[in-house]
Length: 244
Image 1 (cartoon, rainbow, N blue to C red):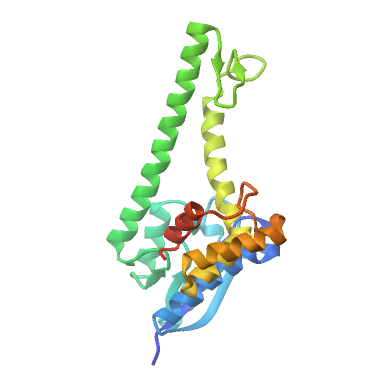
Image 2 (image 1 turned 135 degrees about the horizontal axis):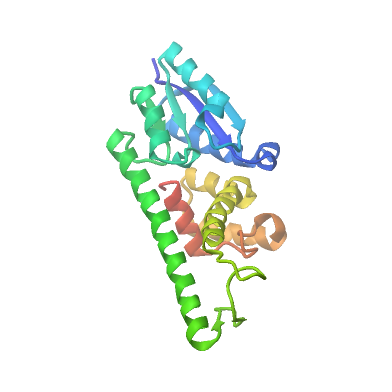
């Protein structure tokens, strides 16, 4: 008897849920790895949820209970469906390790903990860099009366019109930028198409050549987040994200 799987998919915005692109990309990944494991997908649960409490993911709870009843393995396309190590380990422990993350080379507890620890450390480093950059701007303004930004704009003060410190807002903006990037990947026709091609085992140079042709025909649909055609560096980064 083949191994049985039950999938859970989630997107964080109604736009992604309506378009089905984000959910579709996750399904493509899940279907690929179910096939790799020689398994059978017996049920699929998906939802649009923007809240911060894991308890609000009602479809996740249904998927877990279904797995417990049937002995099936819970399969999830991407670990970033959880916000942090605590959430991921909470589900891992409840499932007694009977869970499969498609973007992890090994679904052991140690690997899951390490993966999230690295992601959280990266977020911390980004926060440190942001604070350091703001302090440098403040020093330049204090010593020289102003600061020239990378875009060439001359800045004489930080904050709003009243001169309030915007460090917290800058950190929030950095996190929002990361979320927007993730949301874009979930809803991008180009990212979904590239994911499909990679999972089919096509050579990257062939994918890149065809992606450029698609961009020439429809740049609005098949452009990158910056509105440009796919390049070799971006393709390599995306391939690493889904461990191809």
